[in-house]
Length: 141
Length: 114
Image (cartoon, rainbow over all chains, first blue to last red; front, side, top):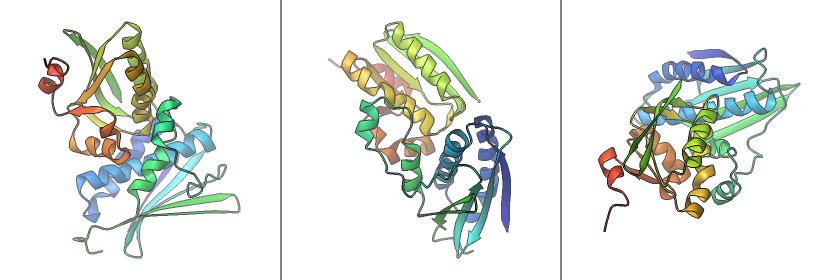
């Protein structure tokens, strides 16, 4: 089974993203804290795409698919904007972020801490980011 | 949706966050904090009892003031966060940089110790 969502590229759509994920992540046996963090990780990736790759153009879309892949949870995020490979993104030093009074830059840090695996590919103008999380040991897919 | 409410108790300014902070509304949090500080606050408390969610956009707002707080001797603490939100602060190690206390009664007594 998979859950799909087309998300409009505006930050006001993030609330819709969270309700979609609340529902679609319910069946995998994750604790409430884990679910909260998964939602956060997905939102950080989408917010980045919306703001930096799509310049908040609500006519452009991001596609999401939540599914089981090789006995793990996979959240696939595809878009056609400028490719942003978060695997190549160097996580900033927290102290530096504070010193420079930057208000951004820590989202991807959160994603890398929360997810077990991250995959990225860009082909024919289509970017796919796959966020992967191992199921809790108590869960049998 | 995010609602912000300001109150004052003694020398402490309290900013209550109601709802969720994300990239669409973190600027409101930033504006409120700026306003409170411009009015000469010396002790700022964030009431997180009704905060259901905060993304890096909101955390970044808090982080951007930490240097100002220490330079200007402004005391800052957050109270009332639920378990899920507290965990998010911990992922980044922000619980070591920001004073996070369980409830309002603890927060109110901060700085009153002899």
